[in-house]
Image (cartoon, rainbow, N blue to C red; front, side, top):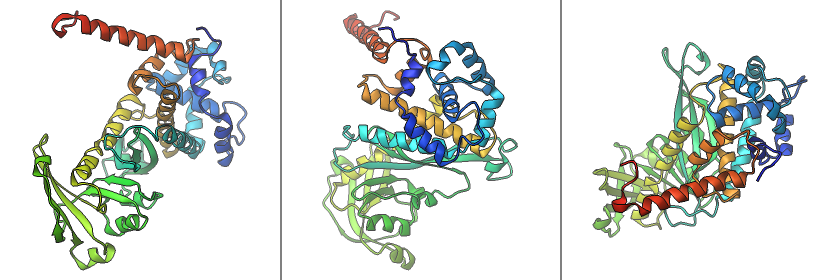
Length: 393
């Protein structure tokens, strides 16, 4: 099915232009701007994400070669690398942060009913951070030692759909614990964290908000056992204890009871100790919940491999944060399209298709249905081959 709109134009229609310009007005993004609007800046940077561009010169060359098709997506200005660099350095990065948050909220609503690996009604979040290394001579504002510079991307990942709910970007010198102070804790939600987020005062505030946490115990974790529950060692549970933390300072910060669970991971051949304030879930469920925390690690690995946040197009803090937030917005936008069109393809495959077809004039349905049919035919052909052998063997 042919259409007058390009794939890139159809994709960008999933962003409300009205909502976008509300964010622009909030931070006065169009002040003294005569050409190359914030929307055009976003489109150029999103194009770079979708087509894996490596530099501003690369973006300029590719977009200029397709200048007759750009107006369909809303790019009317002549693309110049200097103009784009200036926009990234000077236009408030919070415009794109707020756009990302709007898209994240929409995506979380779409994925709210998705099946989670652990059968629970609770919302389950994984909290972790990843660092993006930078050259200290080019990015001195991000230096955390004499020879190193980096920014940290602290992410609260909703494990239903693997959609980030909160992202906080800081330099690496900022403690992970401070991110806990910025979270709006949801009652009945479960927060899975590693040992870097252990702070009993902050965990107790989470406990008082009627939320639950699951984390691993540090090596020096002191615990006064009050009683033990019966466990099924066939499931790998070595003990399930209820008690209180030792030490006057720790008890002052967390006076209520905690639960300590020791689990043997047969795959890794490793013993793990968890503690949680949830007293009702089974010990095996607690262990399974912590195992699901690795989804946030896979999310970080995925975006580093498939989005442009390794090579930055600007050196200022504003330019770096702008690029990261537009990368996140692009990821979430594709996730929204996948859900709303009910595409039976993973995000990686969708991004690969988009990367080579942004300026084709065909419908979304036709583009992705053709790919689905090809995948189905290949799968059927492989099933018909004797002994599971492929034609290439």
